[in-house]
Image 1 (cartoon, rainbow, N blue to C red):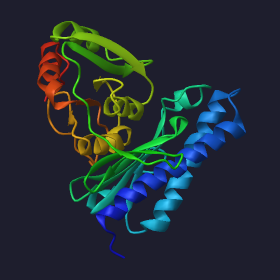
Image 2: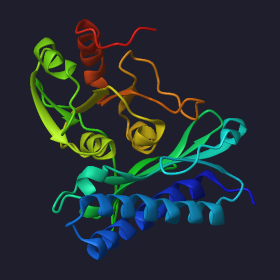
Image 3: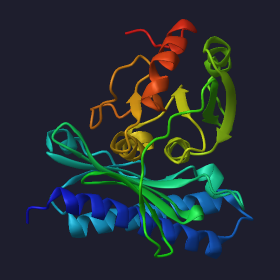
Length: 272
């Protein structure tokens, strides 16, 4: 059966939310005493839930999942779901932390076509829609349109990794023409969502990620009007033979030129 784009947006959101609810149950069942056991249980059970749902609802589509076997047949497929069943396993296994996520994205005919990021501990999903992006609470209240906010003049809050912030970011903070505050946040999805929700103004990363770390939040960011690029300014590409996608910049378009210039000036752009 041919699926409409509208169906893909809705399915991505539903699968991310359902996997997120399962992860909250896993936290309750397993507890926090053994962090490694909790992380493993969360990764596997969320992966199994998403894989089963995609096999049921989109049996003809390929899947690239962090926890699954990479089938090279995806490279010839017209539709590929790129999923991270649990983005931010460290934070998931820490009691009280909410900066972890579930990512579900659809790549179709050369580009990202739909995406959803569930923030289960916050009870909300950020997702694409046919005419933009939405924030949907899980409590049944009405969702709202999502648009990236312009930063306050002279100030820039930049999301960075809690545990391994890129060394160049502090140098970057000294180069740009703004007062920069570095804000540690857990998962990549949580960082990009923080940009879209106006909690920070930018996310810049270089030093190691994969397609599943950014596909879904990038899909939502683009739908919300954000600038998204590699740190050299090029557009990120998905469903590549090598799924490594080590760097990313997400911000309001007004900040992009300043940040890309600063990144270049501190020598953080990898050689071509």
